View 1: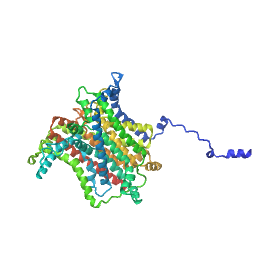
View 2: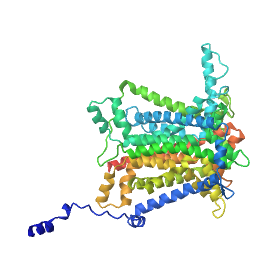
View 3: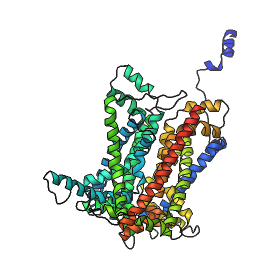
View 4: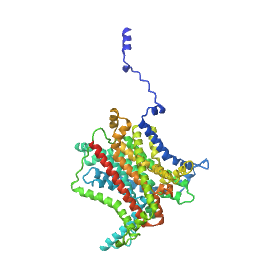
Length: 595
């Protein structure tokens, strides 16, 4: 007995075969009390973003199922009863998917040429892929129409003259911008920067030693690309593709100006017509068509979520990364020529058309080179105080909205990445929800919610800022997600073990590493805000006119020279600011790396 008692008493608790009692789950209130100040602020900001971007949709969502105080499916039934609904969906999906896939390929190649080869042009090459964003979509579509209109297109006219020298006589063409290839081409040009800004930032953070190890192990370049590079860049590529689909399903001006004359029906155009060119506005059909957009964009978001959850990608660890520059040899001028050709076709040509038309004073294939003048610029910028005010308002809104949007998105994305749960994933989905709804519907919801009492913000500067943030925060969130995804947990843990608080860790560790992606996100927000057309048309008033609204007024008036002058000035101003931001961020990065 004594032996048994001794053995029983001397057994250590670790040897007890009985299972340990389950630990009680911490309640939500307990978790909130245990949060530090950084996490608390991040969570509060996430809640504010959800309110900001989701409340304007409450009214339109309620109208989908409730009308005159009763439950109804009339909006859905009327949407499904549209005669050409099948063609409308097929045309939209084909244009968006085709342009998004092309943008992924082109954006990846541009990022590779700029970050991993000796063919880059330095700071100029960093700006080139963003140049299509400097043209407002409505002005870019007009520029391409001026170039490739079958009869009066400048480029078509010059090509016909060249073909005439070798005996080929054409009455029109040879190209027609109002076609499937023309519409997909312009969509692709505007979608490429979404891919480039995410992939290039990820390539700068990816340690090329992983690829070198694969090549040393005997893997071919194609195998290394498929098994190492692409999985490591999967979050950035997925984010770029997701942004492309969001852009495509929400774009109105390009589809209207180029697609409608070609007989290509797009859902965004139909929604705008139902809300602005139908009296009274048919909100039921507009909301029903937006629900269809939600399904397709939701599928793209699910693909991006699966990529991030799979976790088969690289992240920045505690060691410094290095990049091996690929020597292209005789292919260097070829790659450089391809980059220059892309920049020339995607950006320089439509810009050139806009500048020439504005200097010529009217749109014609026969340019009077000896009579070019700046009269259109003088009328637009000197003689018109309304235009000067519009530029000042847009620049201020772009800077303030860009800084606020990307900073808040960075904090929220970092918090969500570090605290994966159903609640945080729900917050993330809610913040990105407006991207799957037509911009026109969101703008109408904001107007109905904030322009009337008790807020009475109609016609103010604040309602525009809120509207822009609600529309473009999803894009900032995606850019911040891609920047956060490349940062491993080791650096933050090492900082905290060293005694640094969360705020200092965010400022001294996470923010510098996220800077390349965040700068791209800021540039995206800035350009989208100052060139916005949809929200500006609804939320801008006589006391807070902005460039987008002014361009819409000029476009409706049919003055192509004045429109070209406004768009050209906007390109110059935004180009200067964008180059300054990229240059400053690069200098800050170099200074931090030296310290």
